[in-house]
Image (cartoon, rainbow, N blue to C red):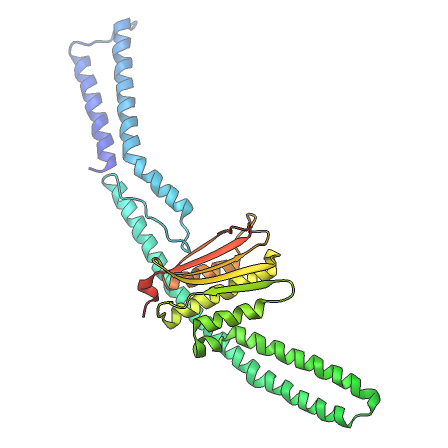
Amino acid sequence: MPLFWRIFLLNAVVLTAATALLLGPVTVSTPVLLTEAAVLTAGLAAMLIANGMLLRVGLAPLQRVTRAMTTTDLLRPGVRPAVGGQGEVAELITAFNAMLDRLEAERATSAARALSAQEAERGRIAQELHDEVGQTLTAVLLELKRVADQAPPALRDELRQVQDTTRAGLDEIRRIARRLRPGVLEELGLASALKALTGEFTGPAQAVRHDIDTNLPTLNRDTELVLYRVAQQSLTNAARHSGACRVDLTLKHTPAGTELSVRDNGHGIRGEPEGAGISGMRERALLVGGDLTLGTGPDGGTEVRLVVPLRHGGS
């Protein structure tokens, strides 16, 4: 029965009973007698208590919906509020859960299209950097070498310095192109790509160590790409923001699935809001049904953990 009719019928029963009593043995005098005031007060209290209990029980499921509305995050799918109550309340909770399902499905579809377009654009830019800018700088290096070989000794050293600067710029462009389009991932697989990635981020100020299982299950291309991009973004965040001197990257096979962990010994998150990089990692994790968590590591730094279930990661 709808909540409106339950409240209406409850009030009708109470008022009908009160009217019958007033028309029968109970009367109201002027001035009101003590017994009559007690009867009226008791009737009013009974009606208020009955209404309060009915509303408390009937509207309690709406409190769960309210909490869900304030805590729902489409990047962190959670438990739906249980369908409870009767009538319109149950229908409202059911409709709210259906709306969340639809929004998460639409967001996953749009995110997949956006990330696919992003990967295509990364590949195009990497190709242009390699083919256009890289070849141009290579030609410049060859021309500088020819000019330096024929230049007077006074200018030769300066031309050599220009060569070194140009060569460093060419190496940086190649490094950027490799990050935009990880060719080693397609050619040699995820394990080799992650090892190469840790080597790129290892430097005088930061040591990056890797521990990669040799018995990983066969992963499809999308899962490998998601794991690689999450590792890449995590290492980038550690290098730019954490102030860490050591980062540990682990990829292993667990009963829950394939687990990627990136931990550093930096200053930690410290309550800072999540930026676009972390939101991007969450969106990528949702594409393969993964669960990404961000928290404090055992050394007090930041730990990023991504678990991809076998049903999504398996071949």
